[in-house]
Image (spheres, rainbow, N blue to C red):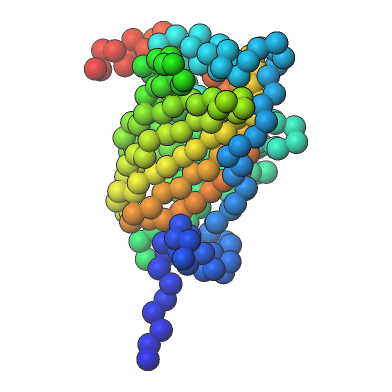
Length: 226
C-alpha cells in the first residue's frame, strides 16, 4: 500500500501537530502568551486610560510599525537576529507543492478609530510580503480589549491575502500587550500570526510596535485616490 505524504496544512491542524516536529525548518513556533501583566510608563494611569491615550490621540489615521523584538529588553531585533530573517512579524510554512513560505507583516495603516464602552475599534490595512513579494491583502477590523484584570489584547478579524503563485489565504493575527510607553508612543508584547488555504503557515514571538502619524502629504494622496 502506498503511503500518502503529509499535507502542508499539518502546521496548523492540531490533529497533525506531530508533523511539525519534522518540519522545524519551515516553522511552527509556539511562544504566544495571550494573558500577560501590563506595565505602563505612567504608573498612575489605568489600562483603559493608557490605551485611550495611545490609540485615540494619533489623529484619524496613523501607522503601527511592527518589529520582532527581544523579550528581555523590548527592543527591536535586526533582520539578522530575528527568527525568520525579516524586519516585521513573521509566519513560516508551506504553499502549493511544499514551497517554503515566509509571511512578513511590517506595518498596519489604522483608520476609523472609535472608542466604545468596553473597547477601541478601528480598521486596518496591511503592509505584508511573502518571500519578499508584496501581498495584496484586504482590510480588516480590529478591537483593543481591556480585561477586568487590566490585561490588554488586540484582536483582528480574519482577512484574505493573495500573492503570485499561491493564491488566496485566510490570515489571522493576535497581539497581547505587556508594556505601554506613552512618551515614545510604543508598546510591546506577544504575537501570533497564521494563514491557511493554498498556503499554510504559523508564527509567534515577541514584538515591538511604534505608533506614528501619517504625513499630511500621504494622507492627501490617499484622499484624492479615494
